[in-house]
Image (cartoon, rainbow, N blue to C red):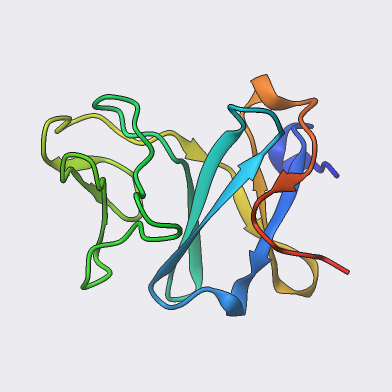
Length: 138
C-alpha cells in the first residue's frame, strides 16, 4: 500500500487507533529474519507519533518489555537501557547520554477504519508484512 503522503514508501498497519492507551505506545516489526526493522507508535490525545525503536546512544531497542516505551506519567519516551528520556512529540533526547540527539521519526497516519498506518525507511521498501504485532486487518 502506498500513497502520496509517504512518497511511495510501503506502509503497514500497526494497530487500531482506539487500541492505543492515551497516552500509550505499541511496538512493531517490519520484515523477517534475525534483524527485522523495529519501530513503535505513540498516542497522545488524538495524535500519533512514530519512531524507529533504536536509542541514538548505543543503538539498543528502547523497550526491554514489549510495548513499554513511556515513563509512568506518559509524558516522555524512556530508553530502558540507560534511562534516556525523549520528547514524546519530536523524539528529541531531553535527558541522558544522548541529549540533543533524536529518535528516527517515521511517517504515520490514521487510515481507513481508524487503523494506524506506518511507513518504514526507504531501505525497507521491499520488506514484507509486519511480524510479531499480532494485528490483523481482516
